[in-house]
Length: 548
Image (cartoon, rainbow, N blue to C red; front, side, top):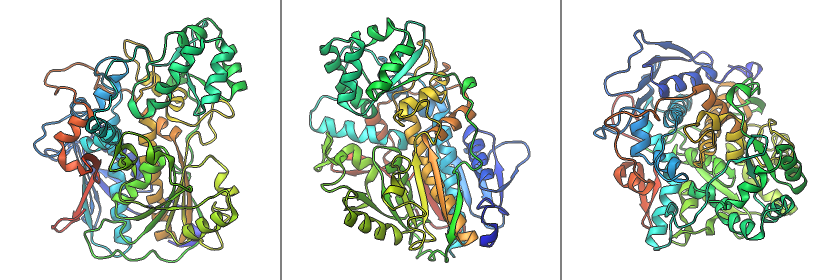
């Protein structure tokens, strides 16, 4: 393939044979087809014994096996995985007890991880490496999703600090409900905006103050006990009045939409992938054993969950990753609970990466960051739209110095925000993107307080980096890609409601995240007494041997 045909999908001309019909296999097949693979499905739709699915790159021996769990764990469906791996515990924590996600969330994540494994194996072949056969499990995908919670809660227990889910704080979680029956989420990352908004609505000062801490921490704790007064005030107003006040105060107020009302058109490429400038060949794969991305460098400028998780996945695939952080380091490094002097939650998303500090508010800091990015193969960031360009770090700004660079923007709304200025975070995206209605049970539609779109969005951003690297490898061009939290919501809508929430016999007891990490020690490495996630895949030469 030449640069003249660079608009073709990066795996065009590649054939994959698929066996199985379980949800993770179907998701993986859809992602590989979007990459350009011609997928031939084995007749009968059955996977090999013990597997949820199998994928093979025709003519190479490379591919990926998809299992439900590691051998001997006895998990054979989504419900069992959600119970054993901590998802049911976390999803139900805010409402008093385990609840199963009515979407096949772990299976969807596993399908994306499987497509990544095939893409990484194809890239390794392009770079002169061995044919690699990967393995991934639905349980491994679930454990990756709960890993930040497991690390933080283990660190809190070591410090004898109160952990989430203790039931000591009264209150209930969002969503809110207006006088005219609109269910909606509220979002702000600014304490002053929170105060202005609730004061303007007439909420009592003590309720406003009591609500801020659990509201701010809900991303990390999966619970949000808010005072009853914060529900009573908007319940007496039409939603239009509350939304007008929110806009005036810089707060997002986002109605919950059923999936059938979501009209956004899917992008032409799931990764909004496009060529930039001509590029030379990628470096060859170094000796085996270091992962399919060994020898490649990633520069990452990210925060919170989605971006750091994407960078972690590339690191776990073998890339050398360095973070660009502000002077003094990322503020999240110091957020309790700590393990070894570092935030346990931050460590779960960033271990194995290097870090440098540059002040991007200064010309010198921007020049230093540009030089660092220009020497990399992938530049990953989750800044708001336009910020990379203002810093001179967008694809056009770096084109002369690094025409072969793969730019990956891990975005939030991707232009699909419900109103200008709405914060692009997990819970508003679940609300606006139809996910909250997919999760409806006896309590009605509500976003999960597990960061579903943040985690899945991180997986999609890592997938975009692989797609961009394949485009460079096969088309001789750099690439730009942009994924978003709304893409994660779109993928969950496409999967639809599953059956994990339907009762059945034989389901294991719902484990909390710390117990789940202890039950699957191979999925974690212990650092300073807390479990940090290992790679969710294993890779081995197709002819035998082992490697990761």
